[in-house]
Image 1 (cartoon, rainbow, N blue to C red):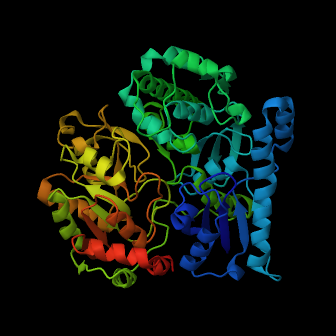
Image 2: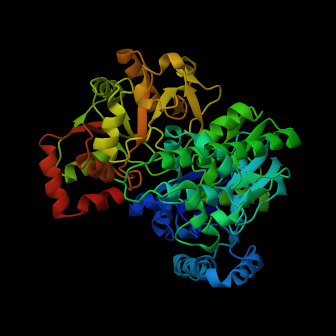
Image 3: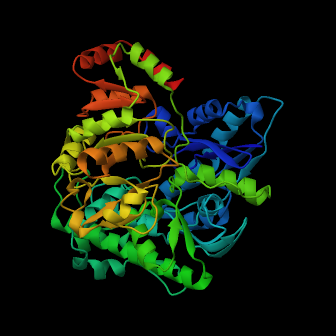
Length: 587
């Protein structure tokens, strides 16, 4: 049985294929179109998924779409009528674009793609069920509490409940405009970032501010009631009418002048303090919900999903302070992961198939063999050296203080590079954080980098008692180790740790151990293989483009090492003449 899972109604369009209850492949559209957070119908991702899985359209038995566009239709219409004077943009985007045009786009693809004969049934799975029930179904837990929090799905902004086996119960849901995600988006925009995309920047900025300067004011703007419902004082916001500016004039009166969206604009102290206060209060709200769920469900584990679940600082506090033994998030906890969640909801809850798959391996994208890589290198007229001991050689290069682009195996799903499409560096070099930010990533200097460490070595460097293979739980760096690994220690002494496991990524695990032999430290700075504003690289050609247009020192493609030197001119010439190499890389 082959299920095609799709997400395309909101952002981060994604396709996946689940065959006989196992996730075979999942790819975000942005990786192929090179347009970050793609909202277009994922036609390229669908084609690539079929190619990787070795299937044709005729092999697809069902389609699962991670939204029910008719859900809460009446509520949306009433909301639009109630705010008629200010809701023109709301009616246009929420009603016309999502309800009618995107469904029509699917229909226009569906008919010719499958032809006249084979027509696989289409199931529309509600957004939050795709998020958190779908995540639970691929978690390692037989039973767990459930929590989904985002800006909004069809109309809901939360899902709280519990699940066991393939069954689940919903305790409560909140509905737009009562939304923790939307409130945090407003603060993100106030700080000069792009709302709905740059919330991670707000989270990273927060430790530079003093939350107490504004905490009392922020806590009166949004809160969690005793029944776990969300409360928002909407007089401070404008997101509820889909205004381009998410906060109101009253918000500005309280906090001061917003920061310009120009990335060169200076951060004033009140911008830092606003980020700090909103981040701290969001953490407290999430903790209040999590603690209550722990008490009411009696469960040992919590499954979290939704855009707010990407707030790894809040996740870290939930692990430490909520009472749950651990939490599970899939690596694509945002809307991209709903393609996977919808497919498994269909398989387990609608088709009543038994659970049998645990999503612990994030490397479910396309991969390239050494032979394919060699052909691409040759087509670009570049020189490269093959090493059978690539982990040992790369460790030597990193120990020399060089920054490495590391391209291996299957591509990761989700916003974090987890060891196959990564930029790596020595975390013991104090200057390395600023160097990678300025010369490679071209991003804001305050933004921290994550460490990767073998799971068995974690207690030597980090205050972390659970695994975190998907880099979604911030923990403390041991005080005695912070000076040793300064490049991955944030200003507040924390790090967004990734635990590396031999069974899921043996090559990256070996690299870390080889680096330890030379440096004494089994930790590497690991950041996504891209520059700011671009998606993570998908193909060897994408990696070559990034390599030759940034301050990366060395590129490792499979077992091949490429250095710049004379290659720089050769690549520039080939890149200017044609896009044949890109076509080869895309298959």
